[in-house]
Length: 156
Image 1 (cartoon, rainbow, N blue to C red):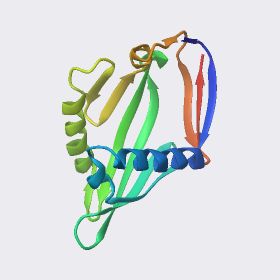
Image 2: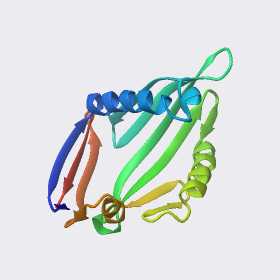
Image 3: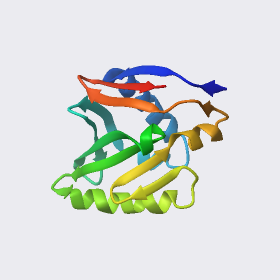
């Protein structure tokens, strides 16, 4: 399959339905018990940020967790930068928490084609990952915007 042009708008509601279904499916797998402790995973889309929120059962009191993520086209539209701006877990987090978490992501993606980490940014080479699924891309990301409870993408 070759993909040369795509205009896509995804709403918070679309993402949250998919997120709920994904967590239910992953809970059936080897990490199931840990994922069952994550309650009410939600995404908010506003002011250029994707904000992920949930509550995690860690002992007696459920702990609120929030991560703010910025998405931007990179490498002239052939890649996507996913920057972890801030992570908050109860009273801990901020930029230091983002750096620590992205260090773990860097270890996890080391040597994987199309994925790299620099600081708090994960760069995804879109064509490389698409090719692994048998999709040839004939264009680049022209715009990617997060606003008004929706994510819009223009690929051509």
